[in-house]
Amino acid sequence: MFDNLSDKLQRVFKNLRGEGKLSAANMEEALREIRVALLEADVHFKVVKQFIEQVKEKAMGEDVLTALSPGQQVVKIVRDELTKMLGNHASRLRFANDPPTVILIVGLQGSGKTTSSAKLARYLNKEGNKPQLVSVDIYRPAARHQLSILAKQLNTPIYEGTPEETKPLDLARGARREAMQTGRDVLLVDTAGRQHIDEQLMQELHELKEALNPTEILFVADAMTGQDAVKSADEFHKQLGITGVILTKMDGDARGGAALSIRSITGQPLKFVGVGEKSDALELFHPDRVASRILGMGDVLSLIDKVQESIDMSTAEKMQEKLMSDDFSLEDFRDQIKQIRKLGSLGGLLDMMPQIGPLKDLKNAKIDEGEVTRIVAIIDSMTPKERRNHMIINGARRRRIAKGSGTSVQDVNNLLKQYAQARKMMKSFTGQAGMLGKRLSKMKLPGFPGLPGF
View (cartoon, rainbow, N blue to C red):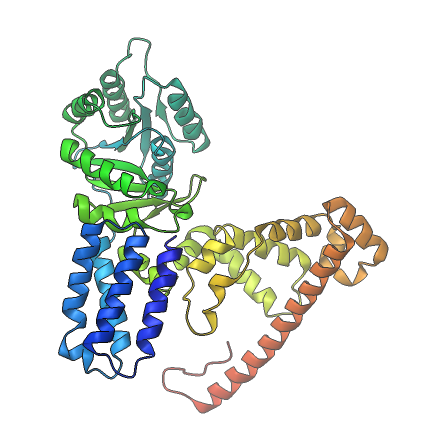
């Protein structure tokens, strides 16, 4: 996500920091490079022009040019303007005073409306709401069947309709009636799409809007289509009046032009981004966090949110105790890997880390997700006794484990070596941390009363 743009902007700022003092000349050069980087990222040219003008106005001021660290001030200005371009703050869903809240999901065919509807249902469930789904796409039975399957997987009710309800409006009204009767507080309406915007599609959506009075009309766009997604969102807003955007396939878009353009062009916020195929791969869009990621500052807050959402804290505390003791077995090693995998791909997690200081080379790290799968398979092929005590794993056992996991003896040897090194490192770290804790406790530092160790 934003990889290409992030790399180019970081090079610009590195050059700026190399300047002893900023001048109008080298600032103009930096702005020119930022402009090119944004255009190559497929950001709309009008948005680029406005962005550069605003950055220039602030960056060319006397306070910046004469500052002790002008390069850092320029980075701050660019970050602030990026955040402003993206919408300043996360835009959350609005709810009706009288339930059920109706959310209309619209967009072109193939943009990901159906999967986004299911993901949004899961998100609402997690937030404590009681959503109900309905598909009014009478033209593609496969779409209705797909949503029905997804709803069952999520254990979320879906309105299938009656034989008499053959029109989108009839299905939508029936779904709202059932939602009211069963106490569901949100109705998600997955509408039909087309290959392109046409009069029939808009007429149908207008009728649904008039009959249902939706609180939100969310336009679903494919990030991979770049400015075509922005153009379609703008057209839908002019004709229908959308209230927000869900941008799908953000994990596969290295440029990010649609995300950076869509709010400025439509005037409507980017509310959610799809970052994978799984039902939980829908994230609330945080402009400030995304701006930080683009500039290589990481997104630690989102990483913390993922940890709190995915990791069982009581299990994590027990694991921490084992890490600090000499009782960290291969079974614990495997369970720790499984916990981390709940957070998503390792590459995605590294993207959230700040690309500065000792972590600056993380983005160049080559992550082999298959290697993680192999490690789990190898440990699963061991007996409980072998997992608890790796010292008993001799040559014959290694051959059996390799055969059972579909790997080689060398793979098993490498895993055992990595595990031994991890145990040694943790033991060393625990000892150093304990010694440091004792020293600090003796010093009685303000704000650290006692501090009996880490």
